[in-house]
Amino acid sequence: MSLNLKEKFKSHCNAKNLELNPNQLILVKQLDNFYKENFKTSLFNFFSKQSSKKGFYLHGDVGVGKTMILDFFFNLVNKKKQRLHFNEFMLNFHDFVHNNKDGKEDNIIAVFVKDLKSKFSLIFFDEFQVTNIVDAMILGKLFKEIFDQNIKIIVTSNTKISDLYKEGLQRDQFKPFIQIMQEKSIEYELIIEDDYRKSKENEKQRYYFPLNQETNFKINKFSRIITKNKKLLSNILNIKGRNFEIKRFYEGISRFDFDELCDQNLGAEDYLKIAENSNFIIIENIPNFNDINSNQQQRFITLIDVIYDKNRAIAVTAEQSLEKLTSSKSLEKPFKRTISRLFELTSKDIQI
Image 1: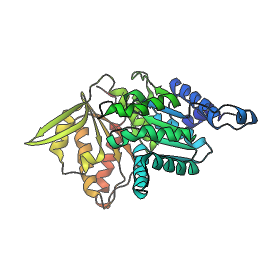
Image 2: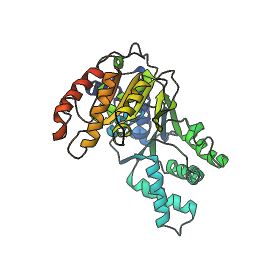
Image 3: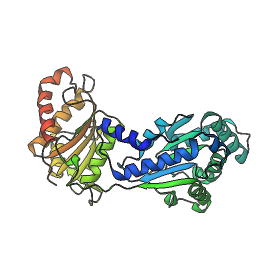
Image 4: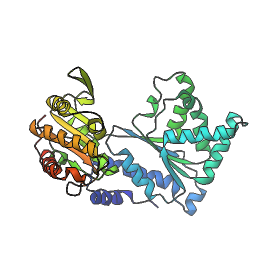
């Protein structure tokens, strides 16, 4: 029995107004097969050999939908399960070791995994990366025990298995982990080639809300499309003797978090310099405003006025729709102008 993932995924994307990509559908079919091999229950399966592939390792560029698709799969699997970032999982492991100091390394790993086994049959590791030498040295033994205990794992990462911990210290001692992951996991790279000229994301209304996973997926996809073939640079602007760094600058396209622009002491001259050095601007995580964050709102009003005067198009993510974005009482009147300008700037033709 399968989960019938393909049709369910199509319905999911349609309900969320997400664009379907053929490569995502191929991935969904692979996940359906992974489910059948590892979770289906039947008399035939009871007597059949256990699947040798107990992990599904999904990697690819930022914004292609890795986490969205594995979340979709994870939510449909009706088993004892856990979802967490890989860093959180390793912190849990080290806490367990600390609380059981008398155990030898091999034994403590076995005890830890036995405890996992009693709670979960599926674990979803999001954002899998290895940067800590302490973690790197024990992952081979830890994941061998996880697979030996028949715990299934699904993983997202920006890095293929063979490139994990690539420049790390004592990497030879990390290679057993690479070997067991390649042996026990299905490794799949999600590649999505977007044509900017054909993309719906190049059309009107680049105002994405609310602040959730689907919105994050859309803005990452949009950013990936318009920055295609552009180099990521660090652009340091000198503003009357002060330096301001545009940390995500793609040859004329600037991407910011709201706090970078409005939660520090910046003013019109800073925003003017940013606009003059940018052909297109992305602003993420615009909050609702109230009397508590009115200082940030005032800066945001100034920022949008400057961008509007410099005739720059923008894309944004926000907590609420334009019609429902709230204001502090003292700034209600000028904020109406900001709302109007936001609509115009996020609908403006892109020229980059």
